[in-house]
Length: 285
Image (cartoon, rainbow, N blue to C red; front, side):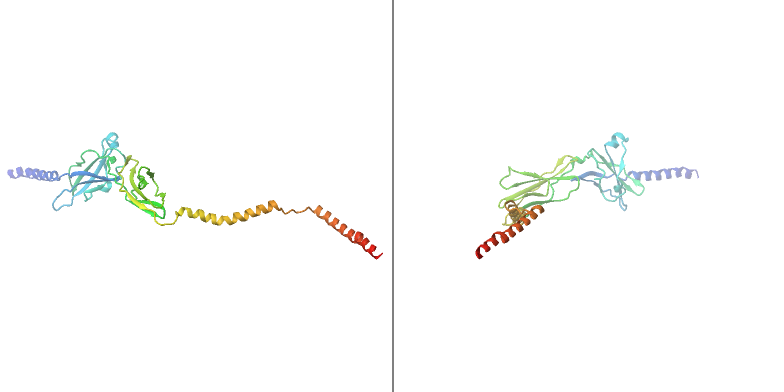
């Protein structure tokens, strides 16, 4: 009986040691790294392999504020809590151009690993910037460029020139670049710029195009149309002005109209009864 009492405590001791040892054997994630391109940031790590078990991972970050003003606290990334993937999109959480710490932990049931930490800090200023996808097109004599939508943080610098005149390049941030001349090729290249990190990408490959069509540039058409429509009106208006200036139509006042009417009647009566009548009497005599 005494021997039995002695072995029971040892049995529970070794059982507890086995449980703790099983927890300690859960390895922490390794090979933690950042993939960052065009202001999109992803934390990756190697999977923890536990036979017959589903391993889940949780990610936390620590920014400059947490290190210096919040007792070196860590903030969990909700979208990357107890996930089975070995990739975490941390773009929304890396919201400032400062140095960040990142760490990952593995979970299997109630067991957890130690935190695996990213070696060194990550700052979004180190993101890799690529040139925009670009398509140069012509619409008659208009030079146009189409650029991919890379997000609100991105601006574009477009450089274009007439082939053979590389020293006279023009810079634009609009999609309608210029009205081309017939004959020469026009060449275009573009780069991205991110203001919050004050960095630019390299330039895209140069694309050259030539104006299509043999007619005159389309921007001259509206002016000829306007001239054709307005010329008859201007001619008619000019004739009217000269007509009123040289041969004005005058309307006599009522008093003058009455005076000339009376005078006309008086003269008419005098001619009939006077000189005309006297002439007739002289003839009969």
